[in-house]
Amino acid sequence: MNQSFDRHRRLRSSAAMRDLVRETVLQTDDLIYPIFVKEGNNTKTEVTSMPGVFQFPLHELEEEVAELIKLGIKAIILFGLPNDKDDIGTGAYHSHGIVQEATRLVKNIAPEMLVIADTCLCEFTDHGHCGVIENGEVQNDKSLALLKITALSQAEAGADIIAPSNMMDGFVKVIRDGLDEAGYQHIPIMSYAVKYASAFYGPFRDAANSAPQFGDRKTYQMDPANRLEALREAQSDEQEGADFLIVKPALSYLDIVRDVRDRTNLPVVAYNVSGEYAMVKAASANGWIDEQRIVMEMLTSMKRAGVSLIITYFAKDVARYLKGDA
Ligand code: PBG
Image (cartoon, rainbow, N blue to C red; front, side, top):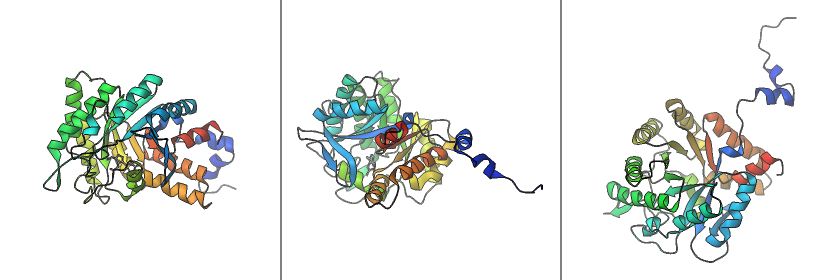
């Protein structure tokens, strides 16, 4: 008998059929792994709120990089924990700063590994803000000058990609001009174009020891309620010369990912942030969820929303799942 409805189940009838019609595929090549590097000679320390994530001293970095290479992970993003902080974040742009030293080390032992340098000041300032403070406020243009020298020192150390994350207006332009003038025309900028003032960064601030010591980041990071503002941010960064656009956090902002994807031809990147990671790990430790399936579903949904790449603390786990040796 002929029915007058569509038979969608035809294309779901077997595993092979489902494989045949799958629209979105997550691969290890899509992943960027964040690494926290810390000054000093201690051993690596696990971040309490982020099980499986460590702060690495330089002398333990080589082993970690070797593991990443074995897993097929091709890109890392570095965050630094300096011994000393001051009010102008000197450690961020010192030629022997922790991120610069870690970059040199990784490029030396594994030249094929792409090193992305997070370009921000909050891990290096004693007040924990992402810029210069005057009269209790983060100063935009004075902070830009420091961001520029930070980016230059990272490029000089061998960083393959510069990833400015401090949300000052004009940061892509100033860094692009700075890189070009210094002969780094070939170094791309992966801009944190759309970065919300999010509670999902909580565990990162433990990991990077970068919580603001007064106030919050709401005068520079975006209001989670806003969508059109995200499109303006993305548009400015593209016009200023960004090569990649990051949307951050990821899970609660997949509508924004799709909006940005539909309006740019640049690669869009999701940052699957620390709080998103911690929630999954906590629920999984309690036996409340199937961690592997949840992680794969979350990351696949980011790709389905339109990203090309995902910065994620789950990168090693996912690489193992995809290899089939979970
Ligand atoms: C630096 C920076 C932050 C994160 C990445 N770069 C922290 C913040 O803005 O407070 C958060 C990443 C995460 O939560 O995983 N500005």
